[in-house]
Length: 101
Length: 146
Image (cartoon, rainbow over all chains, first blue to last red; front, side, top):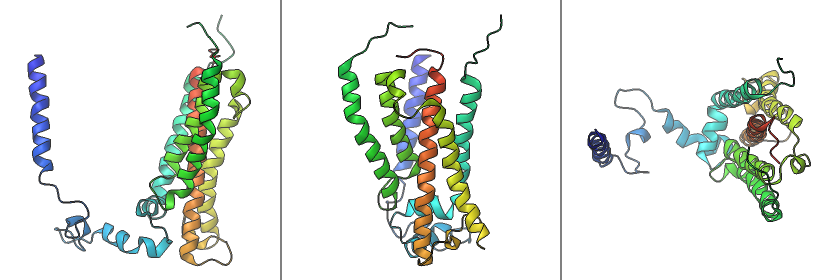
């Protein structure tokens, strides 16, 4: 049984390594995600972000621009999720002073 | 529960490290426009600096720093900073979280967006720091950890 698990793991590792050999090079301008149109004919949003991120916000870090400006409502949702997690710990883990006799 | 002991060496090391971690956390938040980083990562670093003192010094020393009752209001302030930025932009005639409409005089729209991102990153950092500290406080509450 243990040999089977190890075999499955090795098999998956082999599949992942085989797939990673086919990945495009990072930063290659001919990549599909940098194209104006995707292979299905729709416009690629990342193209707009790469072109206009610095012009719109004067911020060199494109990730910050996408996180804080273009997708700011999504980031607000993330913050509310973290806040809710904190409040849940307050409700669940807090030990009340009142004990049941 | 394990027997407690106080080690001045551990406390001294934590007191030495903690301000630098906090400074680096603020650096990560504020320098997030130019380097990897941002509100979430910087907030985690700020929480690390606070929790280091709490773990090393115990309750008595932690009372000198951010107190337990202060974490929930700080988290609320962090969320409100973010939300108020969006609401102010909406009240001044833009969309929700459209930083171009923020009422800061003498700024181009691009620099207004720059400033808006900075404001919300500070809000995120405050909220993340307060909530991580709050989770720790709630987990150890009831047990005398030092």
